Length: 277
Image 1: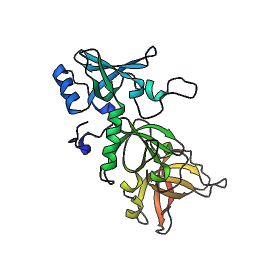
Image 2 (image 1 turned 60 degrees about the vertical axis):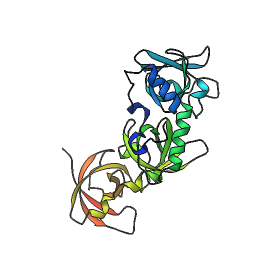
Image 3 (image 1 turned 120 degrees about the vertical axis):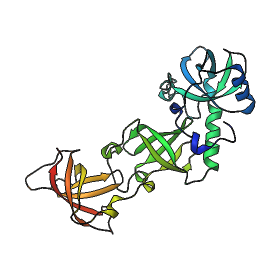
């Protein structure tokens, strides 16, 4: 990764990069001398020598020793391969040339690219926005690919202004892209990230009598004194239950703004009007 790299333009998940089908020995040599990164497709793992094969394009290939593949744990406690490695087989990854040994014997490292990426994050403006890809969802937050193989976590408290059972409840899914900033990098080389402050809270623009579409989540309690709903990912609201009617989980409904309370996180109180057609 070149020191002149423009992070705003290039800091994307590895899968966003394409193989160079015009790869040549000259390009390999230049990347080696300039310590710049290349893009290759991970082809497979060879247990006999703990290496992974990689294809660069135009007939050029090489290998990566497993110790040079990632900053994160690559084996489970039982010694088997972590999904973080084999799930990338068939995917494009970013690498640097470690040993230049000809067209088919070049040795690469992905770990050095990841270290360079972390250094860039540490030195960059803390308000810099990264376009991350959601790779896994837990009850407590989103695991994202920040770029160049770096993993990030957007905890629920950095995702929305109110409590949720699971990020899926408010529309987040694996494979989706989400903007976030980096709060810090922990001792495990994982970025702790924040999304909620990037979004405008729609409740500040709503007034009594406004009619809006919302998604219902779960009843607030057994008496169903109200429904917890979201106007968007970061704008929660409360909706009064309609008499004699139960609203199924995850329904899209039309509601009218009953009141707005600036002193409470659930700023908007709604009345149910109808289900969406």
